Image 1 (tube, rainbow, N blue to C red):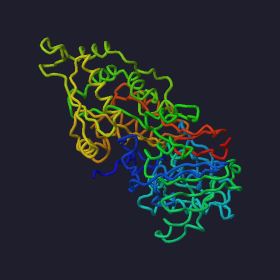
Image 2 (spheres, one colour):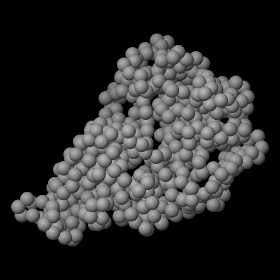
Image 3 (cartoon, one colour):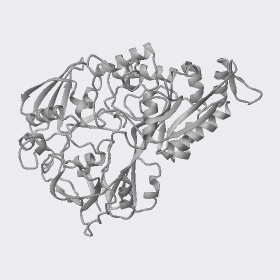
Length: 537
């Protein structure tokens, strides 16, 4: 089994951050490589309670643990946000907003942050949440080898308790997105200060909008509204969490009216929300899809050739035909929705004539025998690797094959199963591949672009450029007042060089039954971010 793909930073200390707070994962079939689903198979669906008055029914996989610092299952983590509150929230545009931490002061060098907590937060057992709980949560994450938030705390040099509601975190090295690493959940010290074997099986007690009431193993979990929730008691009185095997089962359960909410990245979600019984909340995810080129191939080392390869792909057509317009075309790995996106950049449009001109300028000419491009009697041809599990990518690979043929480039599509696909990419035994990164909101692109990551990191395309290395480092350490400028320079150089042929950022969607109303505003990391404002009509 190929090792898990974890994004790393460049600097004095090698570190990055987890679970959307920070790890960058290679995406295989709409989900990251390290996102493991339940091993329980063929479990029958649990029918929802017939009494739906002021009750919300959702679904999640069979949980390995209900301790949020240990849980690596995506939809289990989402459900646990109902019980546990994160230190800060991360919004769709990558900025952070107040939650347990009411306010913060970041020093000019990005090496220390002073946090002030909301002093009106109570644990579900009636005790007050204090600085000690935050410090304890950080120390626990440090100790848990497989915590999804492990990388979020590895850069922490020391912790300082100032008073009951104030603490200071000191970091080993500056990092421009240090605030985005603070999105981990907080657990109560007086409950979880027990041996590790016990910590994974404790009945959950948090400070979130819902209180754990009961659990029937392999069947369901019952939650009830927290009357002391610091953002106000939720309008929905109860939540019933049905435990089911996988995402496909969740979609089926939603279609059969067994659950009220489903959250999915699948392209054809419309068939689950194609009538008046559903409402749709769509937003851009941090899943960046691209065409990766192996820079060990001489033909891909020319920036004009790479630009021609970009111009020759009608990305808007791909998004329309194969993603049903549920994706956003991009020229860089920084989402157009991000607060760091450079709005002065002009999107590079499909233009096959410009692509032909660029290739002609680089010495390519038509072979009268084949009508394909050659240079020094060598055909312009390569193999495009794609994983068979991702049906959308297979279709897109074949469409790109047609588009490239129109300008004289011969492309062979090679389809491989997940293990073979990943092995070939890691060993760099490919010409080009279609892939995707689920990028961290603690933004750093060094893992995929820095020359130091060619041998031991995730720079699988073998891209090496001293100026890019310099721009990555500048963005990495940029103070808050210079962060946008540093990332703007990085994006401008990326668009000039196209080290990856950028395609689009995929959308995700929250689908709810029509009975749900109110101010429903899911975020990519927490679809229940403002569930206290949701209503059942």
